[in-house]
Length: 346
Image (cartoon, rainbow, N blue to C red):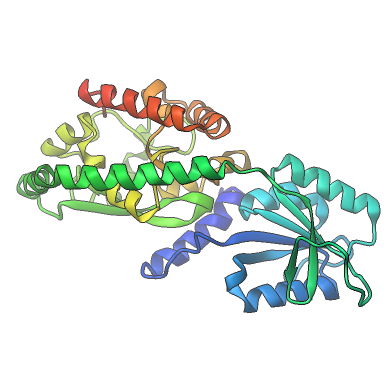
């Protein structure tokens, strides 16, 4: 049975998969509006008509209205909906219940969400405001502090590292592509939808290491799965080709993902992106690993690569997100190089 978080995001991903040319809304902030009354509806309508504001309204929370017509639930559902909808910001639309507003504020802070309030000023102009949505002022109650400089440098490292690597490795990539084609029928590259940041689907590229109908054979092999949780992996997978085994051993099959890094869909370092069928089995507590851009390598890959526990890998991914620094990325990249040279891949 699908978990609610995975189901919500999987449906979005499946729609995107049917329209691969549609750009992802990577720069949009997902917003929940508390209060589906007149002011809340005006806020949602304005944001829908003005995408340049950089906000996408997920829906409303309202304790006085039934679900439907944009109302996703009650304020007590904030924690679950914030995860399943990958919410970045909560806007309180003229709350008349002080205790309710404080509960939402406390919950949003614990979830590390930005919180703003749109007060009903009865036509008066505020002395101070932090932002306007149309003619409606917003006052900031809580803002998460992001390491803006660090994230900019991380992206710069990704672009520079991936760009240089692709130029230097171009001859080797061409040779690998030829060997893959000669070894078994089918294309040299394998492109499959993976769950990216905020559950957005993207096409992840690899050199093909399996027979052409590998995805169709996967369900027949699920009974042999050696990993715990929503993750599929078996030793001596019969679908892997001869050249594929060598590529996997030295992680050479992952090199085309440098293109995903250049496109901004992946980073050099981050949680590995999971296939959509694995992603569909996520529980709500697994969704925080999608708060960041996925990576070609990560903390799990250099510390517990052969650990069959999905929960152990998830714990390491969350640890990486909470402790992230540029220095940590450099250490992981150095350890990855050592693992690759030893031929530690599967």
